[in-house]
Amino acid sequence: MTTTAPTAASSPPDLPEPKRPWSHKVREALHSYPVLGPAAVLLLSVIIFSVASDRFLDPTNISLIIQQVAVVGVLALGQTLIILTAGIDLSVGAIMVLSSIVMAKLSAEAGLPGPMALLAGFAVGLLCGLVNGFLVTRLKLPPFIVTLGTLNIFFALNLFISESATVRGTDMSPWLLVMGNTFNVLGTNFTVGSVVLILTCAALAYALRQTGWGRHVYAIGDDREAARLSGIRVNKMLLSVYAVAGLVYGLAAWVLIGRIAAASPQAGIDDNLNSITAVVLGGTSLFGGRGAIVGTLVGALIVGVFRNGLTLVGIESLWQNFAVGVLVIVAVSIDQWIRKPA
Image (cartoon, rainbow, N blue to C red; front, side, top):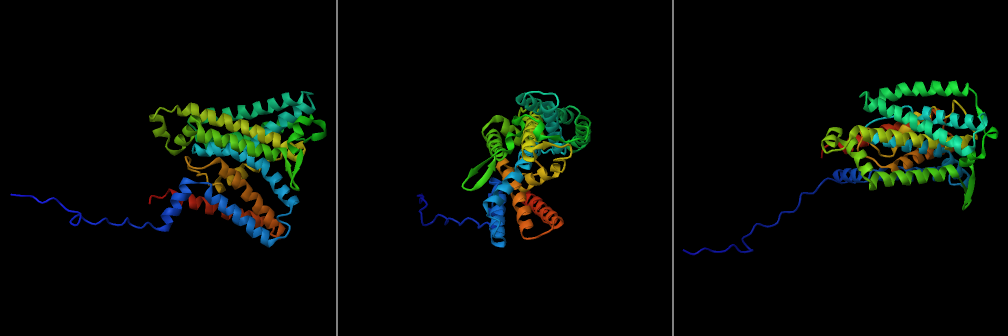
């Protein structure tokens, strides 16, 4: 009995791969590159407002937008670290203002040299971050509840130390005002604070993408139990994240003093929600584990461009808030869509 070897003619033909819907490709792209969506929104906003107003692309107006987003931008970078771990920080504005008041009072009234006053303000930011981290990791309290409580505590301390009075920039060391100094590039004025915003963004982006610490931050936000079982010391990591965020809030305090040339106990309190808005619009998931620090910078610019552009075309402040609110809901809806199983 003889057997016949199968020939190429008798083998089954290769079946074409099933064609995936375009929506799946878009979802995969947004999942792989979280900054893609926010960058497209920013570009579209710039084009629309450039057509709607001749003054939008004026160098003076561009300078104004950059200066306006510097404080919220730095603050939102610290907030991003917390949200990436599936937490949230409602006390960011209170920590920033408390740090700025300590810096200003030590310089203007205690006569401490500028660098020493700055270090003291950074130490306050670090300490506040560690308090939040300790309560979250050791007492196992939800970050929302912890930071809601410390928001009120830090704000009360801020009023107590400042005696509800503003410290004028003319009474402080020039070191504390350096973030407000400007320099000109191609007709556009940039502040030192805006450069610090970009440098801080670059440093944190490197830490999150190129170091083990950054990979652990994403792992904890994606699945805390799985991260623990893989050997990550979750509590220690979370404490370090809150500490780094506190230092970033201290840096935002320095930028804030330079921006308004003073230290006011009421300045920046509303920046709690503004920082969360910038993070969400930047494509970072409120459920943790997905997002990019560069996206937060883009998110802050989207808010700045939107508010500035709407002002130029004569839209009232209340409708500006309405528009930003719609943007936030759309951003969260897109995040939910990305997370849905294919």
